[in-house]
Length: 193
Image (tube, rainbow, N blue to C red; front, side):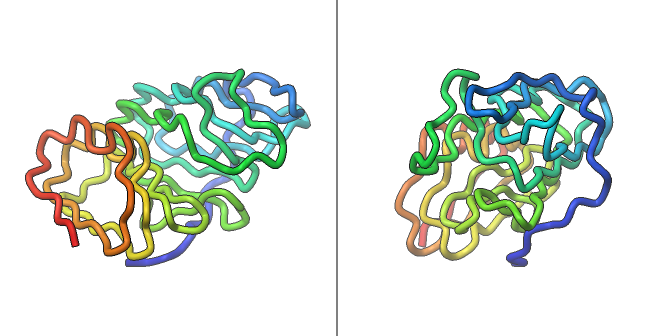
């Protein structure tokens, strides 16, 4: 399995393609996407504010989205605009439900300079590789081997990944969070080490 952070393949989408809100911390949170393009590259800033967060429901039901690239500036997925953590808070990739019913999303890519997240074979992980944050629901694989070093399968990480039939978990896995495999209708095998 490749342990790479994928490079963006296209220029960022226009800021006008995104609905966003300012955060009290000075950054911006993406709250929606107004374009039906199959490839989305989130810009690192909008109107001079760094894009530091994505709202939990930002891309829900975006059925034409196939590839998403996060910039280096994105640090959090937020459950609400009001739950931005204070500066220097312990990092936790909470609230990930941003890709609900993005049925064609086959890869989530991350700029290599991102200090919070990385992509391994199109799957979103924390930068240290210890938490699998999100598996793209439209990925065509039917089998997936979670990489060694992963300790946590995040909340809703495989939510409604209907093509997956088997998942192999690594040695050292400590936690499977709520609803991690919810709606994985074809899943017949989860192999524990």
